[in-house]
Amino acid sequence: MSIRSAALLALTSALILSGAVSASASAHAFFVEGKEVAGAETVEIEVSGIVLKQGLSTLLGEKIGQECAESNLTGQLEKEGKGKGEIKTGSCKLFLVSAGKKENLTSCEISSPTFKVNESLVTGPGGVVETEIAPSTGETFFILTIKNAAEKTCVLKGTYEVKGRYVCASPEAEVEKVTHEVICTSTGSKATFGKEPATFFSTGTGKVKSGKASRAE
Image (cartoon, rainbow, N blue to C red; front, side):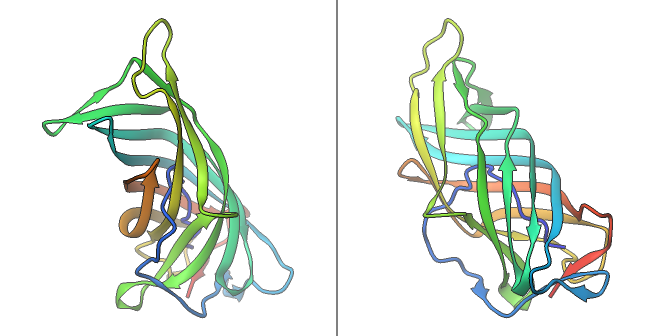
């Protein structure tokens, strides 16, 4: 189900600050074909087709954003609604937002980081099951590197920590299905890019690698 994690992602930037989320941890579990994932059992999952849009807030007085068009998460579902995985980001670009319009910053290149995460099923608003995604250790998801594009000068050149925690929803998380839509937004999440608050939006499709139907509750 909420194998929705991911992404990613991310990817990036996931990058959420160390802050409390609106969702609260509770007793939850993953089920695969009606059987609860328990004990030492591990169920491989994947979230593909992740499109990540990270609002990197204000850098040097400019509204900056990051978009990764090709990202994915692979991981494992574990007992008691826990899980872990790795997010790989791809085709990441930096853009400037001005007067409601987006302009690619062609003078800058950014890294496409790979990072490990932990997942936990939590109770969201209205009692729905959601997934909280956090760094595997500490508060930092990854370090984003911005550098000069070929023969150009990037004024944002440098390294930036992406921190936080994401909360992702799946419209039918509690319905036993082979694939589940994954939607991660700033609602309930906390993210920072460098030292600035950041917005986050990501979508993808999750499933158990074996192709079996899954759900969470």
